Image (tube, rainbow, N blue to C red):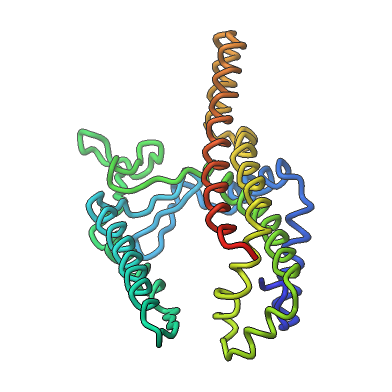
Length: 289
């Protein structure tokens, strides 16, 4: 969407991002991201932190560990707000004088409240620099550790895989979105302008609902590619299903059963993604144009 902006700076930056990362081989991109993280993150002995809430080093990133009940409460809050909006719109549409009203600040405020609930009572990472006998070894970094359960750990390997897949896939998805929007007739945009809709309302109520009809089938294939491309996590030494089975094949030698297990795993994930996207596609194309 930014690439279609009338702002030359914004559209140029979006174009550069898309053309750079879309044309990079994913394996090379994963390797470059992992290499950059290894060089830029501080050593464990020089652990850095952000307001003593987030600790990061080359051994991992530790963030506050949220409580389960707060996670459940946040999910229930989101479902409650969504259900209330659906109920309100359903009743309002029965009124012959119904006029659509949209509050773009509602969901950002709900998400901010949920983040506050999740991290308000979260357990913070706690670094220890002694042994079980309470003998302090400040000069022996190998004895330092983070108390188990005091923080949620994000390993550098997992972070490298997520960043690499996100940068690559987002650039491809951006082109799918841009092409689907530009395929709409110009008259649809002019009609929404004549109705007095703002740019946000035009995008949300007129452009995207129609663009989704051609966008979802392409996104379906791309989301399945993300699932299958995750097997490249072996490049950054992340222990995903492919890496674990690869190690087992080298150690056990039972190639056929392990290959079948690997194929069934990826097939099940692809079928699940395809089923969800096909269901959503049927909902979007329910109304014929």
